[in-house]
Length: 261
Image 1 (tube, rainbow, N blue to C red):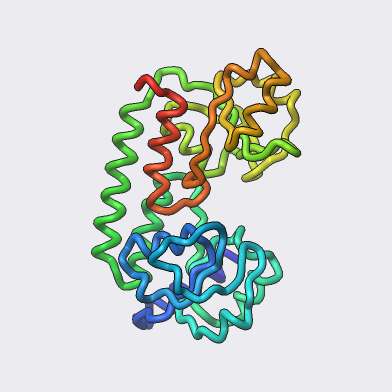
Image 2: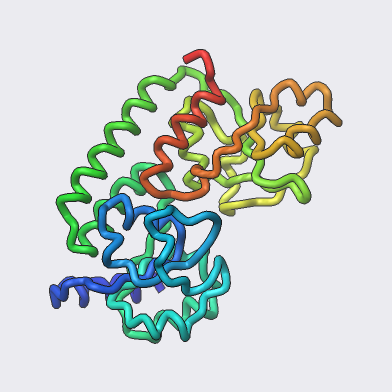
């Protein structure tokens, strides 16, 4: 499958056709287009959460996991930006058969994210904007790494959901964000992006910090008094959208993990 996507992009690049109509199939990719000042090219986008005000009038092609293929085709895109997890396997196969160039973005680290911002900019014909934006992101990433580095990383459990209990695996970009903050994901040995775990396994790995997304999740840890004092609230949803804004969300994450630095 990866070779197929790459082949499409090579054909597209070789032809040198200017991109004029872009459909984005992830909120994070729509944000990258906006950050590059290329929102004028965006003719359709997949919805998921609140939209940036500047994209309020862009036509919708569905919601997370529910792509309206007929609507997408009616927009006549000459480039599709895709995060694989936003579209089900059957519809990904349909996209393969459309003969429309597709750029697949699924960064597993913040370094990959900065590189993909540049790559997307080049696909959109906004290379200079991409150089500037990716340089800003690399500089911010370096600043955070330097500020929060520590000889012995803090052991951190990052809770995605509590019923059932989900976390992030080692190949997930949020796991890399933790490392930027001088921390280590206690489940970084798991390969799934969002593995289900149980409370016994969390207790066994003895995290020094537990990160949760809302007050209800924080309250639930009171059932384990010895762990409850380690719980810290991270309500920032920017960590879930790997676009340029994620670097600032990582900065806020670092402040939660190490507030005295």
